Amino acid sequence: MVTRTMQQKYQYDRVLSGELHPFPGIYEAVSEQILLLIFKARQLYQDPEYRPWFEEQHRVLSALRANTELLRIFREQRSAEEPKLTIEESTSPQPTPSALTDALNVMCHLYNGFDEGNISLKTWGAMQEVQTTSTFISPGPRTWKTPELAKFVGDDLFNILTECKAWSSPIPAETRQGYCHQDLSVAHSCTSELLAHMNQYHEIDESAILARVIGITVNGFYKKNNTDFPEWLSPFKEEHKIFRDCPEQNTGDVIRRKEQLLKTGRTEFVNNLCRVANWYEIESIYDEYVRLYANEIIDWFNKTMEYFKPTDFIRYTWKFATVTPDKDTETGHTTAWEKDYCQITIQRDELLRLIHTNTLQDAVIYLCHCLQEKYKKSSQNETEFPRIKPPASESEINITDNFEFHSLLELSKDNEKRLETFQKWYEKNKVLLESHKQKRTEKIDVAVRLVGLKAYDLHEGIPDRPKRKVKDGINEDIKADTSLRLSKTNISDTSLNRYRRTVKEIINNEIDVFLLEQKKKNKRFPYSEDRDVIRPLWGKCLTGQ
Image (tube, rainbow, N blue to C red; front, side, top):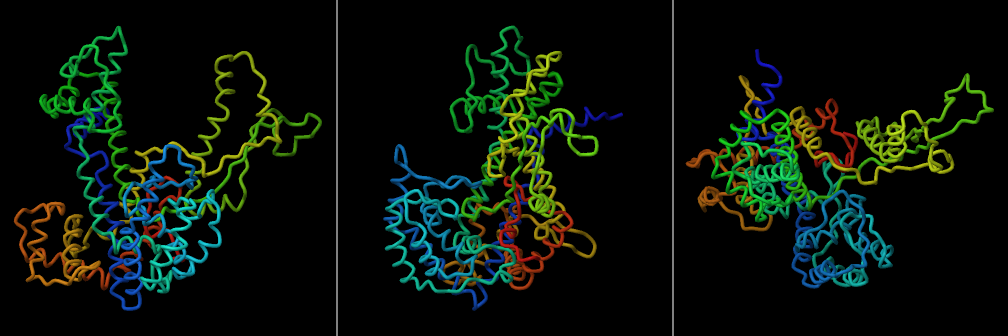
């Protein structure tokens, strides 16, 4: 009889040895959302009514990326020892020192203006009216405000907008199908950057992750003076050598342990671990490996998403306080308690919104975290002095001193939970990376869609290249591109042409069908709108679909 413990051990063995991935569907899940966005941008670009808008934004974005004055402002701002800047709190990763990110720090205002129905020059005028001080925080994400930047926006940006003839109308919300203008523009102009970030998923070094876990485990035994060093860790024993718990995988300590792991043999090490180590040790190694792996994936995900507009999350406030009831008040027929109690309140409209957006569970988990932190000391006192009930602190019993915990406060992220939740959502809502044939459902590899997309872009000259025909060498360029990761080494021209035609068919005729299908599925299996959740890119400007 196979026990649950035996099944778990087998699972641990397969994951640690590299036979299985801890989050096998996450790459496809993220890739599908990016591909749906790019295909939607391509569809809109093919429409003569909206093509001028994409061309305009491409000109403006290219001009800002090439502007040396803007790059200098942000470079000096980053290098300042004590920057006197106020940065808006955001869930998005901090900007990287790149020309594209610097340009988007300015462009995000214009994109937000389009979402509100304004042309670029009107948004520029509004920027002049409200951004008047060095401490002003823009409503847009990833934005700094300095006098130098104010001058740039007032002079250089205006010149760029007029030279680029920035007077195109926004794309209607119903036509965008829930996508915002920033994401559509980035998908059109910066496809190569997005695909490069996507490809970095394959650069996650599993051996380096396991080497880090081994190092952390070795440290645990070093710190226990009276604990014998286990045999299964002996290849990594170093006398009086403490491993640094390195957050990066390219440090000297990690590299040395990785080299030893490869010398020992990863499979051999894992097999020996599962054979001779005790259950607690195996489980600890596995849990730490999955945790570090999840962190690597989230880091990859954040870098892939850094050019997109951050998604708004539901704002809510929990209020609570420890209350001592008035002894003279009759409580027999009320909901009040006869003894000290914790009073928790939330506004009714906020509660209904949390329920409507499938967010109540996230909000309650957040509330639990806040309560545990606030009442930690009182809880410890009752544990340490079980027979003596210490008085509640003044801060607790003072009802006039309610504690407010807003959704804006930072909460420790459970990256494993984030990935598992999105994987489950994807399995129930995927539309692009599978083909429903009469006899069977066939999974479509991400690489196939990426190959078709590149061939399509070369054929159409997107974003700003000359159009090419197949006879001009499109297929040869694709075969030479190692980043596309085709499983077949000798892929035929016939297959490549089929991949391109399939993508063309999706863009021209099927993309809205896919989007509507996913939104329909999402009504049955909705994604959460908590601030740390991974969600589809079409959920930023919903129009009631």
